[in-house]
Length: 341
Length: 220
Ligand SMILES: Nc1ncnc2c1ncn2[C@@H]1O[C@H](COP(=O)(O)OP(=O)(O)O)[C@@H](O)[C@H]1O
Ligand SMILES: [Mg+2]
Image 1 (cartoon, protein in one colour):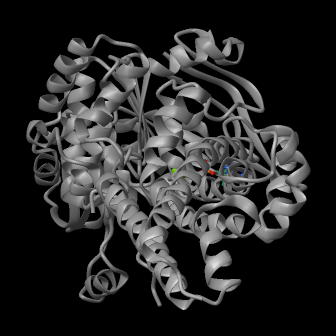
Image 2 (image 1 turned 180 degrees about the vertical axis):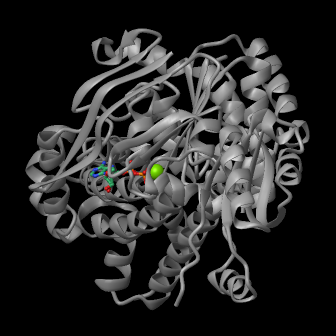
């Protein structure tokens, strides 16, 4: 669907070079909700803007539907752009047009007949839940409503790709959740492939099936959201995941626990079906040791369960060792170090 | 020496008509030329939709040279060209030529400034929707800038009433001519007061009209 092959983008500012995107290769498949996450300045927007050639790659190729964008004539490029919807952090609606006028605009560019524009505008307004606001002007809308108009406008010409530049970053958490739900519907009901960029891990966690992490222009990690979430490799990825998935209590709590005789603290990761069985009880009973859950979460991610628990064990030292060895056959676990100060 | 008001009122009326005629025609032609130059200044800027260093630099220098020249000097300096274009340098119609040129360059800057204040994100969105550069000019830039543009044109119109009076002093007709011949050369205060009052009323009318229209467009 969208393919970046060894793409770099270098901006020349005065006599300084900014390497905004460096050697990125990524493939976004049909039906994906693909998320690119990174801190501000990582190069996400630049990468996204190369999908409709708002930004030209300095080297490498970007293909959409197997077409190399750099080989398109200006007219063909405009045609392609009409097939790629785009939404923005600041909505970018025209202040001189009503809600309906904004949604009709891309269809007017396509010279769609007036009657059809009217019908489609109504349909889109109802899809995004703004039927009552057709005659309002953007300044009369809340941020979430503006983004709904942005989405309706992006969908007007029945695109098969929707690209989103920080579409929820200007919204409060509740509105963000609504917009994310709408994007999910765009993907599921209309079969539109979504490529989004964000600096918020919860956006990735909520709706994406695949993710790439960017830093300094490089993609440092990518894969299925479940895999990256449950087994992050790069420290930056781990930081992002910790931002939504705090997996450790404060050091003060841990120290207190240790001072009260706590010992044998392990991080246990349950993935998929291992969360369905009473694994911890079974094995600890077998060896006559006790376990205590100190901290953790069990959550659903991409229709799969994922548990991340801090568990301590009590009892005979040798029995604990055996129990842990057996547990390690089934789930991932490693000892957690409590810093002594 | 006293003025015969029975004879004088029709002259005042005629002069007011001439002033309105000069200002309106100047506004129409000046706005057309000014909007074109202003748009060109904007779209040919660096990184803009029709970037062209040559066109931008030429226009920019031209605007910068012409705009600061005091109108009375400009009027005189331009008179050879006025003669070529209009056939004469005297009379109301002849005055329209230098007024239009001066107005066009003022309006060009006003237009350019209004365009600069449009959110670039909106232009980018249109680009991403597959709009061509010309479509962006006519379906995004002009409608988005229209509200403040009307206010800018109102401001220029008030200036044009001033220009017309200046043109009147050097043979352009209109209220300026009346004020000079009666009020200045014959020291007739009552004529002076009448013309001043009419000028004030004209300015107020223009301002009111401009405010009303721009309010309608801006919806506030
Ligand atoms: N048009 C531009 N000219 C010069 N530098 C740019 C331009 N666009 C982006 N950059 C630079 O490229 C880097 C990546 O920017 P961007 O893609 O916007 O990052 P992100 O969206 O991840 O915050 C930043 O250092 C930014 O300053
Ligand atoms: Mg960005």
